[in-house]
Image (cartoon, rainbow, N blue to C red; front, top):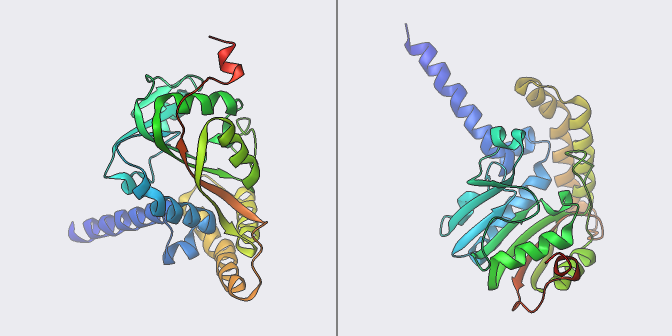
Length: 262
């Protein structure tokens, strides 16, 4: 009598696990089920591509649920999150901090990961100085930040960065750019923003409902975006995210903001 219920439970768990995987690393199934297919696929593929540049002791600032940790199995990984009651219950972090001072000594890490975090930081100059402080000279910074995206996690949403703006900001804080890449360009970026709109206006606290809506409303958009990207000319001026690999230069001085505080 217990065989069928156990089998159904196994199937349900397998489906949930697969959908969770498709959430941040979408492949074929994600075309049908993931409202953020283009954005998440672009991030996943680019982070995986650059993961070999991240070595040694690694700090992932704003690690969330650590969806990309699998790409850094060669590293000694430490996830850090902002210390809030919500983050304490929903995030998967090794430690928490006040959002101002990184709780580590100077030159503590060989590499830093800052994924979709900088847009939420209201004092980016101070943050980048702090990141540089805990990063060893010559250490690598892997940073992603949106250029085109809706306002989210309100009121903790500060900025969007163009490819020129983020490079300027990093160089200002003693990082040299190894690679600057635009993720999800042209018609796919436009389709992704449309799907993000549909997701926001239809979202309910029901996984089944959201899946049905994705199948009915977002999947056609994903398919159309893929097809049109083969037909229409590319336009890299319209894109979702900046993907940056940078190197910390030798420390020479603090920015004037931090210097005034010491």
